[in-house]
Length: 191
Image 1 (cartoon, rainbow, N blue to C red):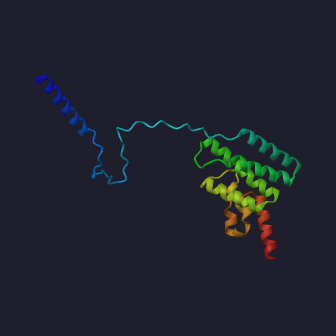
Image 2 (image 1 turned 135 degrees about the horizontal axis):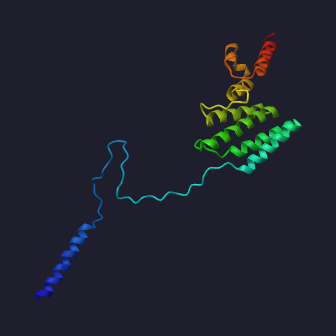
């Protein structure tokens, strides 16, 4: 009989100990971080990275937009310039600010081309919107034409000529032809 009592006593003790270890009652003491320092939970399982599709430029869209731009240059059609600008804007509309450098360069070039195609197509208000978007998407960055003139300065001179005074005109990195045209415009507006 002692053996039988010993087994029951052992079983009862085990149950009491296991019940005490798996208590689910909430504790009033919770650990609160006292600083903004991130705390690494060593017991947490490593989170599996989510599948992220690499950011790419739609080459078909880019090819069609550049072909339309080439046709607009050949025919000098304002309608085709506008269509090309809209298609270029659609090609680059899905890009965020964080992208690989090479892709960023391509997006900047396509964006710049859309700005100037809006200007050539006569839609100055849309060109201004695209220019503001360019400056906010690529702050502090600029592109340069073959003659080393600045895209930002050229677009500013074309889209905001009334905001440029004589002293600012001299400091803009724009072509001499554009500078002469702006001086001529200013002369005739004042006389």
